[in-house]
Image (cartoon, rainbow over all chains, first blue to last red; front, top):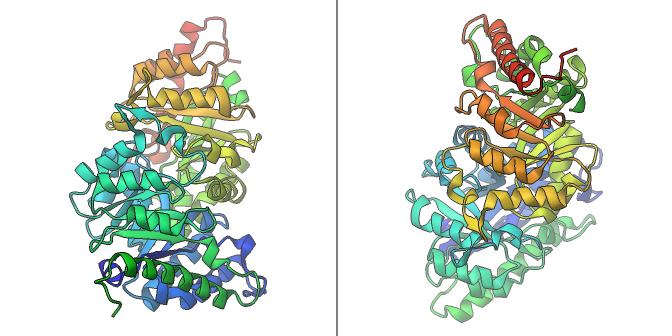
Length: 278
Length: 278
């Protein structure tokens, strides 16, 4: 990830490849898993120049059963082959007791070869040991999600601060001994992101919710970007991969990714005038 | 489930079929997924007489990749065929934003044909709509987990009561409009279970952690059982399915299940003397 950040690349492309939304022209005669693989291959080919990372949400693959997991594994391998050095985040949001999380760690890091994953911290830091102990792999811990009802529990006030800040503080103060942690913080909540950035310092923050979910890119950059240290990943999924339902979906995805990439670079050029794209 | 409860069957058998722990004599020449299917078939055959439900934790299947998902789907189908009427709970602990949870609902209820699932409520009740709205399917919501560090966040006090009670109250008061909700409450915490039972009334409670995790069966029954209404499911996994590492694993599993079943029935006979096994 550091290499991407050094180039001021922050854009994560979310391959939420919902089978119902694939363009009709994408491998129309093939089975669902083949169509998913074909689509992902096209999107990766069209966008990797602008990608700091790719994120694959497991739900969209599990929805077509075991063949979906095959397509998921294929896509991870494809990205690592076609665009080596661009990390693949498997957005699984797993969380169970420790002995079960050990099996999830095997599933995600070893079977799927994810470079990083997202996890749910609800059952406490003790359960996360199987993820945190793999120092060469990344762990993004859910702190504040991007959905309208996220605050129901995440915003509950405990000893003067909301639950999501307690989680973020645990990540920054205790769970990051291996230097492999980050947090997930929804883009639809600018002021929360600012608070989180203050709290976690230079820890990586993955921000989903740019684009279709309504998060404002410039607000996110202003709240979450740290000059020089960078350490911010902004994710856009549907607004890129489904930029066009037509046969021009590849070029539309490329344009959408390029446009976000350009907005990011243009913003950084203003606030960090010393930085020049090489 | 009502039919099992009417017979005072409460024992859920957890098919946490960890590939590393399968008896050496179980289909030794077969591939991992075939061995899992073979093992599960043997265990179901040996135990269904005593089972109120079966629970399959997705982690143990995902750990062997897409073929594991095939074995998981096969096992659900096998239970529904061999022991019709015994519900299958897919213990997935999924939780994401609403549009993503809709895909998980498809994956778990439609692709895998789960009768019920477990979900994580961290992102708020709004995100659970895709699960709650399927009234013919069960949804067990994580309230208090059974691991040693569960209290780190779940016990945080908010307005005079711990977070896990806030979650349970949301389930009982607001999320159960379809009558398809239950909660998950760890067996290793007797007093918490008693509080939860008081709070949720007759709502089903799924209690993992009997056996290997150290939960005490009689304590759980005393804290969670509601006379006449029943509505309690106690889960044992490893202590049953891995009762013997030898070639007698089938009879050992049967004995372990029968023993827990008998303990439950004997306890019920004492506290509910009017009830007679038919």
